[in-house]
Image 1: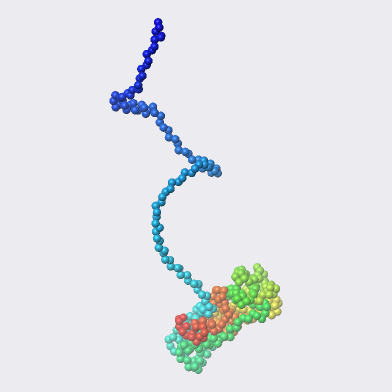
Image 2: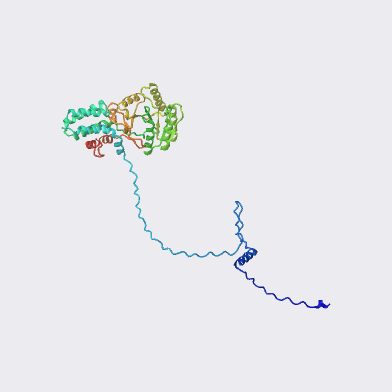
Length: 417
Protein backbone atom coordinates (compact mmCIF):
# COMPACT_ATOMS: atom_id res chain seq x y z
CA UNK A 1 0.00 0.00 0.00
CA UNK A 2 2.85 2.38 0.56
CA UNK A 3 4.22 1.44 -2.78
CA UNK A 4 4.02 5.09 -3.93
CA UNK A 5 6.53 5.99 -1.36
CA UNK A 6 8.90 3.65 -2.92
CA UNK A 7 11.71 5.56 -4.63
CA UNK A 8 12.30 4.86 -8.24
CA UNK A 9 15.74 3.70 -8.93
CA UNK A 10 17.92 6.37 -10.68
CA UNK A 11 18.46 6.10 -14.41
CA UNK A 12 21.85 4.89 -15.21
CA UNK A 13 24.15 7.32 -17.08
CA UNK A 14 24.27 6.22 -20.59
CA UNK A 15 27.39 7.37 -22.39
CA UNK A 16 27.14 8.08 -26.10
CA UNK A 17 28.73 5.19 -27.66
CA UNK A 18 30.21 5.35 -31.10
CA UNK A 19 28.52 2.96 -33.38
CA UNK A 20 31.08 1.30 -35.38
CA UNK A 21 29.85 0.36 -38.80
CA UNK A 22 29.85 -3.21 -39.45
CA UNK A 23 31.57 -2.87 -42.73
CA UNK A 24 32.75 -0.32 -45.35
CA UNK A 25 29.39 -0.22 -47.16
CA UNK A 26 27.57 0.77 -44.03
CA UNK A 27 30.14 3.52 -43.35
CA UNK A 28 29.66 5.01 -46.81
CA UNK A 29 25.90 5.06 -46.37
CA UNK A 30 26.21 6.76 -43.04
CA UNK A 31 28.51 9.46 -44.53
CA UNK A 32 26.06 10.17 -47.32
CA UNK A 33 23.28 10.56 -44.76
CA UNK A 34 25.29 13.08 -42.77
CA UNK A 35 26.10 15.14 -45.94
CA UNK A 36 22.41 15.21 -46.87
CA UNK A 37 21.49 16.57 -43.45
CA UNK A 38 24.20 19.32 -43.60
CA UNK A 39 23.01 22.78 -44.92
CA UNK A 40 25.15 23.84 -47.89
CA UNK A 41 26.80 27.29 -47.84
CA UNK A 42 25.25 29.83 -50.20
CA UNK A 43 27.72 31.99 -52.15
CA UNK A 44 27.03 35.63 -51.72
CA UNK A 45 26.57 37.45 -55.07
CA UNK A 46 29.24 39.89 -56.10
CA UNK A 47 28.34 43.51 -55.54
CA UNK A 48 26.52 44.86 -58.55
CA UNK A 49 27.83 48.18 -59.85
CA UNK A 50 25.23 50.76 -60.70
CA UNK A 51 24.70 51.09 -64.44
CA UNK A 52 25.47 54.44 -65.91
CA UNK A 53 22.28 56.20 -67.01
CA UNK A 54 22.66 59.05 -69.51
CA UNK A 55 21.91 62.38 -67.92
CA UNK A 56 22.01 60.99 -64.34
CA UNK A 57 25.10 61.51 -62.26
CA UNK A 58 26.14 58.37 -60.37
CA UNK A 59 26.11 58.49 -56.58
CA UNK A 60 29.53 59.03 -55.11
CA UNK A 61 30.96 56.05 -53.22
CA UNK A 62 30.95 56.11 -49.47
CA UNK A 63 33.81 58.03 -48.05
CA UNK A 64 36.45 55.91 -46.53
CA UNK A 65 40.17 55.51 -46.35
CA UNK A 66 41.54 54.73 -49.74
CA UNK A 67 43.34 51.50 -49.93
CA UNK A 68 47.00 52.10 -50.66
CA UNK A 69 48.05 50.94 -54.05
CA UNK A 70 50.67 48.27 -53.90
CA UNK A 71 54.06 49.51 -54.85
CA UNK A 72 55.27 47.75 -57.95
CA UNK A 73 58.94 47.82 -58.42
CA UNK A 74 59.91 48.40 -62.08
CA UNK A 75 63.10 46.83 -63.23
CA UNK A 76 65.82 49.35 -63.94
CA UNK A 77 66.16 49.90 -67.70
CA UNK A 78 69.35 51.41 -68.95
CA UNK A 79 68.76 54.06 -71.68
CA UNK A 80 69.89 53.03 -75.14
CA UNK A 81 72.31 55.41 -76.76
CA UNK A 82 70.78 56.66 -80.05
CA UNK A 83 73.21 58.01 -82.57
CA UNK A 84 71.90 61.14 -84.34
CA UNK A 85 71.25 60.70 -88.05
CA UNK A 86 73.00 63.21 -90.22
CA UNK A 87 70.42 65.00 -92.41
CA UNK A 88 71.76 66.80 -95.39
CA UNK A 89 70.11 70.20 -95.90
CA UNK A 90 67.92 70.42 -98.98
CA UNK A 91 69.44 72.66 -101.55
CA UNK A 92 67.00 75.49 -102.34
CA UNK A 93 67.59 77.01 -105.71
CA UNK A 94 67.38 80.79 -105.69
CA UNK A 95 64.74 82.30 -107.98
CA UNK A 96 65.93 82.94 -111.50
CA UNK A 97 66.98 86.55 -111.94
CA UNK A 98 64.69 88.63 -114.06
CA UNK A 99 65.93 88.96 -117.61
CA UNK A 100 67.06 92.34 -118.82
CA UNK A 101 65.21 94.03 -121.65
CA UNK A 102 68.12 93.28 -123.96
CA UNK A 103 67.87 89.55 -123.23
CA UNK A 104 64.10 89.55 -123.63
CA UNK A 105 64.47 91.41 -126.93
CA UNK A 106 66.93 88.82 -128.23
CA UNK A 107 64.60 86.03 -127.19
CA UNK A 108 61.62 87.79 -128.75
CA UNK A 109 63.36 88.34 -132.08
CA UNK A 110 64.69 84.79 -132.28
CA UNK A 111 62.47 83.82 -135.23
CA UNK A 112 63.37 86.88 -137.25
CA UNK A 113 67.02 86.34 -136.33
CA UNK A 114 66.85 82.78 -137.62
CA UNK A 115 65.37 84.09 -140.85
CA UNK A 116 67.90 86.90 -141.36
CA UNK A 117 70.92 86.05 -139.25
CA UNK A 118 70.74 82.31 -139.85
CA UNK A 119 70.36 82.79 -143.58
CA UNK A 120 73.26 85.19 -143.67
CA UNK A 121 75.44 82.80 -141.67
CA UNK A 122 74.80 80.06 -144.21
CA UNK A 123 75.61 82.40 -147.08
CA UNK A 124 78.69 84.00 -145.59
CA UNK A 125 80.08 80.82 -144.15
CA UNK A 126 80.63 78.96 -147.41
CA UNK A 127 82.19 81.37 -149.92
CA UNK A 128 83.64 84.80 -150.38
CA UNK A 129 81.80 87.90 -151.58
CA UNK A 130 80.52 87.98 -155.17
CA UNK A 131 77.41 88.97 -157.12
CA UNK A 132 75.80 85.56 -156.65
CA UNK A 133 76.15 85.93 -152.91
CA UNK A 134 74.51 89.36 -153.01
CA UNK A 135 71.57 88.01 -154.99
CA UNK A 136 70.99 85.27 -152.43
CA UNK A 137 71.26 87.89 -149.71
CA UNK A 138 68.48 89.80 -151.45
CA UNK A 139 66.19 86.76 -151.29
CA UNK A 140 66.94 86.33 -147.57
CA UNK A 141 65.97 89.93 -146.79
CA UNK A 142 62.76 89.68 -148.79
CA UNK A 143 61.82 86.50 -146.94
CA UNK A 144 62.12 88.44 -143.68
CA UNK A 145 59.58 90.99 -145.03
CA UNK A 146 62.05 93.83 -145.28
CA UNK A 147 60.20 94.89 -148.40
CA UNK A 148 61.45 95.56 -151.91
CA UNK A 149 62.42 99.18 -151.36
CA UNK A 150 64.34 98.58 -148.13
CA UNK A 151 66.06 95.49 -149.56
CA UNK A 152 67.19 97.31 -152.71
CA UNK A 153 68.45 100.21 -150.61
CA UNK A 154 70.48 97.91 -148.37
CA UNK A 155 72.01 96.01 -151.30
CA UNK A 156 72.92 99.24 -153.09
CA UNK A 157 74.76 100.48 -150.04
CA UNK A 158 76.47 97.12 -149.55
CA UNK A 159 77.77 97.13 -153.12
CA UNK A 160 79.16 100.62 -152.60
CA UNK A 161 80.99 99.60 -149.45
CA UNK A 162 82.17 96.35 -151.05
CA UNK A 163 83.95 98.23 -153.80
CA UNK A 164 84.94 101.31 -151.81
CA UNK A 165 86.25 99.54 -148.71
CA UNK A 166 87.41 96.44 -150.61
CA UNK A 167 85.51 94.04 -148.42
CA UNK A 168 86.73 90.46 -148.70
CA UNK A 169 85.51 88.37 -145.76
CA UNK A 170 82.03 87.40 -144.72
CA UNK A 171 82.46 89.08 -141.33
CA UNK A 172 83.23 92.37 -143.04
CA UNK A 173 80.15 92.15 -145.25
CA UNK A 174 77.85 91.26 -142.37
CA UNK A 175 79.22 94.14 -140.31
CA UNK A 176 78.50 96.43 -143.23
CA UNK A 177 74.93 95.07 -143.48
CA UNK A 178 74.32 95.64 -139.76
CA UNK A 179 75.63 99.20 -140.01
CA UNK A 180 73.39 99.97 -143.00
CA UNK A 181 70.34 98.46 -141.31
CA UNK A 182 71.03 100.60 -138.25
CA UNK A 183 71.19 103.69 -140.46
CA UNK A 184 67.77 102.79 -141.92
CA UNK A 185 66.09 102.23 -138.55
CA UNK A 186 67.68 105.09 -136.59
CA UNK A 187 65.13 107.74 -137.77
CA UNK A 188 62.31 105.69 -136.19
CA UNK A 189 63.85 106.01 -132.74
CA UNK A 190 61.97 108.89 -131.13
CA UNK A 191 60.80 108.34 -127.53
CA UNK A 192 57.37 109.65 -126.58
CA UNK A 193 57.50 112.74 -124.34
CA UNK A 194 54.27 113.36 -122.40
CA UNK A 195 55.46 116.36 -120.40
CA UNK A 196 54.14 119.01 -122.79
CA UNK A 197 50.44 118.87 -121.82
CA UNK A 198 48.31 118.00 -118.79
CA UNK A 199 46.45 115.83 -119.35
CA UNK A 200 48.39 114.35 -122.26
CA UNK A 201 45.81 112.59 -124.43
CA UNK A 202 46.89 109.53 -126.39
CA UNK A 203 44.41 108.07 -128.85
CA UNK A 204 44.91 104.37 -129.70
CA UNK A 205 43.84 103.00 -133.10
CA UNK A 206 44.29 99.78 -135.03
CA UNK A 207 42.58 96.84 -136.71
CA UNK A 208 40.76 94.06 -134.86
CA UNK A 209 43.13 91.75 -133.00
CA UNK A 210 46.23 93.91 -133.29
CA UNK A 211 46.61 94.10 -129.51
CA UNK A 212 45.28 97.60 -128.79
CA UNK A 213 43.66 96.92 -125.42
CA UNK A 214 46.57 94.85 -124.14
CA UNK A 215 49.01 97.53 -125.29
CA UNK A 216 47.00 100.14 -123.37
CA UNK A 217 47.37 98.11 -120.17
CA UNK A 218 51.13 97.81 -120.68
CA UNK A 219 51.47 101.51 -121.54
CA UNK A 220 49.67 102.38 -118.33
CA UNK A 221 52.23 100.37 -116.39
CA UNK A 222 55.08 102.02 -118.30
CA UNK A 223 53.90 105.57 -117.58
CA UNK A 224 53.24 104.73 -113.95
CA UNK A 225 56.79 103.43 -113.58
CA UNK A 226 57.94 106.86 -114.78
CA UNK A 227 55.92 108.69 -112.14
CA UNK A 228 52.88 109.62 -114.24
CA UNK A 229 49.26 109.25 -113.17
CA UNK A 230 47.08 107.52 -115.76
CA UNK A 231 43.38 107.29 -116.65
CA UNK A 232 41.93 104.82 -119.14
CA UNK A 233 38.97 105.56 -121.42
CA UNK A 234 37.10 102.47 -122.65
CA UNK A 235 36.19 103.86 -126.05
CA UNK A 236 35.75 100.41 -127.66
CA UNK A 237 32.01 100.11 -127.13
CA UNK A 238 31.46 97.54 -129.90
CA UNK A 239 33.47 94.52 -128.81
CA UNK A 240 31.68 92.67 -126.03
CA UNK A 241 34.71 91.94 -123.82
CA UNK A 242 36.70 95.13 -124.52
CA UNK A 243 35.32 97.06 -121.56
CA UNK A 244 35.82 94.17 -119.12
CA UNK A 245 39.33 93.57 -120.44
CA UNK A 246 40.29 97.21 -119.98
CA UNK A 247 38.79 97.28 -116.48
CA UNK A 248 40.88 94.23 -115.60
CA UNK A 249 44.01 96.07 -116.71
CA UNK A 250 42.87 99.04 -114.64
CA UNK A 251 42.63 96.84 -111.56
CA UNK A 252 46.07 95.35 -112.17
CA UNK A 253 47.63 98.80 -112.50
CA UNK A 254 45.39 100.46 -109.91
CA UNK A 255 44.22 103.16 -112.33
CA UNK A 256 40.77 104.60 -112.98
CA UNK A 257 38.79 103.37 -115.99
CA UNK A 258 35.93 105.44 -117.43
CA UNK A 259 33.52 103.08 -119.18
CA UNK A 260 29.86 102.48 -119.94
CA UNK A 261 27.88 99.73 -121.61
CA UNK A 262 27.11 100.51 -125.23
CA UNK A 263 26.79 104.18 -126.03
CA UNK A 264 28.93 106.33 -128.24
CA UNK A 265 32.71 105.90 -128.26
CA UNK A 266 33.33 109.63 -128.64
CA UNK A 267 31.06 110.42 -125.67
CA UNK A 268 32.89 107.98 -123.39
CA UNK A 269 36.26 109.49 -124.29
CA UNK A 270 34.89 113.02 -123.87
CA UNK A 271 33.73 112.21 -120.32
CA UNK A 272 37.06 110.57 -119.54
CA UNK A 273 38.98 113.68 -120.55
CA UNK A 274 36.80 115.88 -118.34
CA UNK A 275 37.33 113.47 -115.44
CA UNK A 276 41.09 113.61 -116.01
CA UNK A 277 41.00 117.40 -115.90
CA UNK A 278 39.09 117.38 -112.61
CA UNK A 279 41.50 114.89 -111.05
CA UNK A 280 44.63 116.43 -112.55
CA UNK A 281 45.66 113.21 -114.30
CA UNK A 282 48.88 113.30 -116.33
CA UNK A 283 48.06 110.85 -119.15
CA UNK A 284 44.77 109.71 -120.73
CA UNK A 285 44.89 106.52 -122.83
CA UNK A 286 41.79 106.41 -125.04
CA UNK A 287 40.89 103.05 -126.55
CA UNK A 288 38.91 102.83 -129.79
CA UNK A 289 37.14 99.98 -131.55
CA UNK A 290 39.12 97.91 -134.03
CA UNK A 291 38.33 98.43 -137.69
CA UNK A 292 39.69 97.50 -141.10
CA UNK A 293 40.96 100.21 -143.44
CA UNK A 294 38.46 99.01 -146.05
CA UNK A 295 35.48 99.78 -143.76
CA UNK A 296 35.09 103.37 -144.84
CA UNK A 297 32.13 104.20 -142.57
CA UNK A 298 34.16 103.04 -139.54
CA UNK A 299 37.15 105.07 -140.68
CA UNK A 300 34.84 108.09 -140.80
CA UNK A 301 33.68 107.28 -137.28
CA UNK A 302 37.21 107.22 -135.84
CA UNK A 303 37.83 110.58 -137.50
CA UNK A 304 34.77 111.84 -135.58
CA UNK A 305 36.28 110.54 -132.31
CA UNK A 306 39.38 112.59 -132.98
CA UNK A 307 37.28 115.73 -133.60
CA UNK A 308 35.39 115.23 -130.31
CA UNK A 309 38.69 114.94 -128.43
CA UNK A 310 39.65 118.27 -130.02
CA UNK A 311 36.49 119.81 -128.56
CA UNK A 312 37.33 118.54 -125.07
CA UNK A 313 40.93 119.82 -125.33
CA UNK A 314 41.74 122.22 -128.13
CA UNK A 315 45.24 120.80 -128.57
CA UNK A 316 44.17 117.15 -128.40
CA UNK A 317 44.75 114.44 -129.16
CA UNK A 318 48.43 114.98 -128.51
CA UNK A 319 49.41 111.56 -129.88
CA UNK A 320 47.67 109.13 -132.24
CA UNK A 321 49.25 105.71 -131.82
CA UNK A 322 48.62 103.04 -134.44
CA UNK A 323 49.06 99.49 -133.11
CA UNK A 324 50.43 97.04 -135.70
CA UNK A 325 50.63 93.26 -135.45
CA UNK A 326 54.06 92.18 -136.71
CA UNK A 327 52.57 88.94 -138.07
CA UNK A 328 50.85 90.76 -140.92
CA UNK A 329 54.17 91.64 -142.58
CA UNK A 330 53.83 93.93 -145.58
CA UNK A 331 50.12 94.54 -144.89
CA UNK A 332 51.29 96.86 -142.13
CA UNK A 333 52.22 99.41 -144.79
CA UNK A 334 48.63 99.58 -146.06
CA UNK A 335 47.33 100.05 -142.52
CA UNK A 336 49.74 102.90 -141.81
CA UNK A 337 48.67 104.62 -145.02
CA UNK A 338 44.90 104.26 -144.38
CA UNK A 339 44.90 105.29 -140.70
CA UNK A 340 47.27 108.14 -141.39
CA UNK A 341 44.81 109.50 -143.96
CA UNK A 342 41.89 109.22 -141.50
CA UNK A 343 43.33 110.41 -138.19
CA UNK A 344 46.93 111.50 -138.83
CA UNK A 345 49.16 108.83 -137.24
CA UNK A 346 51.91 110.35 -135.12
CA UNK A 347 53.46 107.18 -133.72
CA UNK A 348 53.54 103.40 -134.05
CA UNK A 349 53.42 100.44 -131.69
CA UNK A 350 54.56 97.10 -133.20
CA UNK A 351 53.39 94.11 -131.18
CA UNK A 352 53.91 90.32 -131.23
CA UNK A 353 57.44 90.43 -132.63
CA UNK A 354 58.15 87.31 -130.59
CA UNK A 355 55.71 85.23 -132.61
CA UNK A 356 56.86 85.94 -136.15
CA UNK A 357 59.85 85.81 -138.50
CA UNK A 358 58.62 89.00 -140.23
CA UNK A 359 60.37 91.49 -137.99
CA UNK A 360 62.03 92.94 -141.07
CA UNK A 361 58.80 94.85 -141.71
CA UNK A 362 60.22 97.53 -139.42
CA UNK A 363 62.78 98.30 -142.13
CA UNK A 364 60.01 98.48 -144.74
CA UNK A 365 58.10 101.00 -142.60
CA UNK A 366 61.24 103.05 -142.12
CA UNK A 367 61.76 103.36 -145.87
CA UNK A 368 58.16 103.86 -147.02
CA UNK A 369 56.21 105.39 -144.10
CA UNK A 370 58.75 106.66 -141.59
CA UNK A 371 56.58 107.33 -138.54
CA UNK A 372 58.20 107.30 -135.08
CA UNK A 373 58.22 103.77 -133.69
CA UNK A 374 57.35 104.59 -130.08
CA UNK A 375 57.13 101.07 -128.62
CA UNK A 376 57.73 97.44 -129.59
CA UNK A 377 56.33 94.34 -127.90
CA UNK A 378 58.16 91.02 -127.65
CA UNK A 379 56.09 89.06 -125.15
CA UNK A 380 52.96 88.77 -123.05
CA UNK A 381 54.47 90.12 -119.83
CA UNK A 382 53.43 93.51 -118.56
CA UNK A 383 57.03 94.76 -119.00
CA UNK A 384 57.47 93.33 -122.50
CA UNK A 385 56.44 96.57 -124.22
CA UNK A 386 59.32 99.05 -124.25
CA UNK A 387 60.46 102.09 -126.24
CA UNK A 388 62.14 101.26 -129.52
CA UNK A 389 65.94 101.48 -129.61
CA UNK A 390 67.44 101.01 -133.08
CA UNK A 391 70.85 99.79 -131.93
CA UNK A 392 69.40 97.25 -129.49
CA UNK A 393 67.07 96.03 -132.23
CA UNK A 394 69.90 95.47 -134.73
CA UNK A 395 72.11 93.83 -132.12
CA UNK A 396 69.28 91.45 -131.23
CA UNK A 397 68.80 90.53 -134.90
CA UNK A 398 72.46 89.59 -135.26
CA UNK A 399 72.85 88.49 -131.64
CA UNK A 400 75.77 90.83 -131.06
CA UNK A 401 77.05 91.38 -127.54
CA UNK A 402 75.77 94.65 -126.05
CA UNK A 403 78.40 97.36 -126.09
CA UNK A 404 80.38 95.89 -128.98
CA UNK A 405 78.24 97.43 -131.67
CA UNK A 406 76.53 95.62 -134.46
CA UNK A 407 79.85 94.62 -136.00
CA UNK A 408 80.12 91.45 -133.98
CA UNK A 409 76.95 90.11 -135.47
CA UNK A 410 78.62 87.54 -137.71
CA UNK A 411 79.66 85.31 -134.87
CA UNK A 412 76.24 85.59 -133.24
CA UNK A 413 74.48 84.75 -136.47
CA UNK A 414 76.63 81.64 -136.94
CA UNK A 415 75.76 80.61 -133.40
CA UNK A 416 72.06 81.02 -134.11
CA UNK A 417 72.34 78.94 -137.27
